[in-house]
Length: 409
Image 1 (tube, one colour):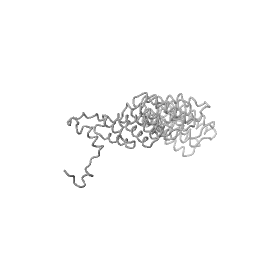
Image 2: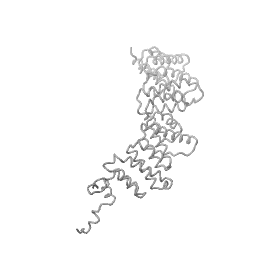
Image 3: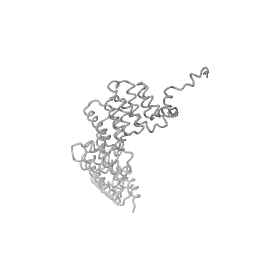
Image 4: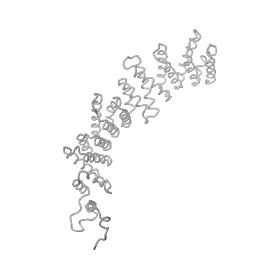
């Protein structure tokens, strides 16, 4: 039968596709008396082996679209990575080989093919190309879930790179960020320390944020880990642990309140130490502001103690007025009778100073009066009433009258 003009181009099926159709069993060889069809994985491996270097990735792409791909695709990607390793010495710098290695590594991750972890690590050790290493690490974050050996090796890599960074040696920032993300994805509690070390090492913001995110993704009791750092770590790490906890979107009021309470307790205990004084004071101030915003009155006793310490520090010129105002606001946020009584006593002291020598601070006095009114505790009655008999400005006297009207009996 003669072919009509033009049919030879449009209707022709590529030889490669015909080969796949045959080996996949679309045309069973047994019916023609031939050998039984070879397994589909073997068929793709054969085509991969025969393909030129620049066409090997295309074989993998075609295989991924096969309707039976889920049954074999992970093994095919592993087969491709074995080829990448075997030829690394000769073709390791070839762009097509690098592209193939990255594609196969990515495929292992997308397929969730856990047996590929070992070969992925071998590729990571042999290839220094940033694209390959990044794709390998991303894949390990998927296939390494629940595998302590993968977590251990990721930890070792990150720890080594952090050591290099601290020694001001060159590091691969792309691989670092990918490793941090992979550690978070694997989620092993053994990674807490190495991630926290990365967080406080001064890495660029992208890696620091990735480390903070990865810490929040690990299993175990993250709040307890951070509390341990706040209690036992050096000053700079205490503050970093506090910030990581308060900035964690997964923590609710209870977790953040407990972290802030721990931070205030520790910072008050170290208030007289000379070492790390700046970080400790910053930790204390941050804890107080957090407790106020959360209205975490479980820390009531610590907040009252902080209030008295801050008053003393202010009188000797060690802290600014802003810190006194923050302490007053935190007392009001506690909303307890103990806090109200402490503020009322301080108001009485301010009145006595005003009566004796006419000295008072307008901002602090106004803050005290308004806070006592907001708290509404009757313990403040006498000292608020006394304001009307002293030579305060009318603005403060008016605020005192308003506060008296808000007291609860």
